[in-house]
Amino acid sequence: KAGVTQTPRYLIKTRGQQVTLSCSPISGHRSVSWYQQTPGQGLQFLFEYFSETQRNKGNFPGRFSGRQFSNSRSEMNVSTLELGDSALYLCASSIERPTDTQYFGPGTRLTVL
Amino acid sequence: AQSVTQPDIHITVSEGASLELRCNYSYGATPYLFWYVQSPGQGLQLLLKYFSGDTLVQGIKGFEAEFKRSQSSFNLRKPSVHWSDAAEYFCAVGVRAAGNKLTFGGGTRVLVKP
Image 1 (cartoon, one colour):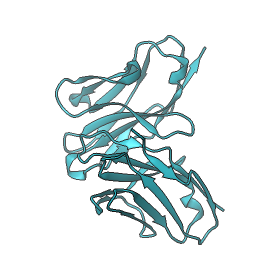
Image 2 (tube, chains in turn yellow, brown):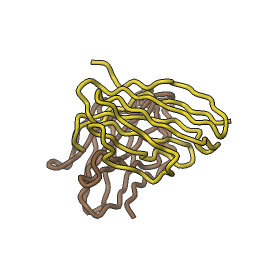
Image 3 (cartoon, rainbow over the protein chains, first blue to last red):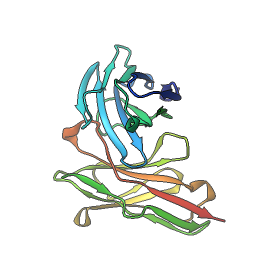
Image 4 (cartoon, chains in turn cyan, orange):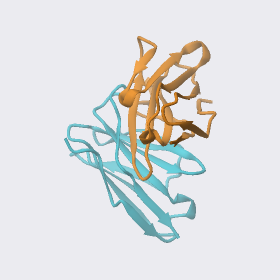
């Protein structure tokens, strides 16, 4: 079974631009969660989508948004990029419940110049 | 506030020696507990998880962890470390009310000496 895939793997943007990251979950998984990983703040939860609905949201500004499609693929968007948005963005997929194992993708490394 | 603490930022261990990584949490409800490992440039891989039942949990790659409610701890152990265990280890906590949201500790980087 294929794992969680994230595209692109690397991205360089400049301040003020916007960016869209994509995550394809494992087949049959309906929950997709997004995390931001930085050296200073560590791993922080952004949001979770389940059956095309946002089920949970972390403490990030409204510039960070996401969506999920009917095939469970998810995208996250960051508008008006800031230098501090440089990070590794990880997505994780699971079947449904908190007790189901979450499988993480390799991440998208975003650099904002 | 809910939090997860990994007191050790770095640990250096000799190959073949035992390893113990500490994790303490502060949560009002009974949490779900996880240990993940991250190799350089990689995503996170689940080592083991605890939801209920036996407080000693066995995981992959020879790791185990023990849940101690009285100490709010979930420490990870391995009796004999291999060079391939060099990586960063994260303890994470979830609660039923928060769906699949995980709160992670700051991580412990493990270096293995030959």
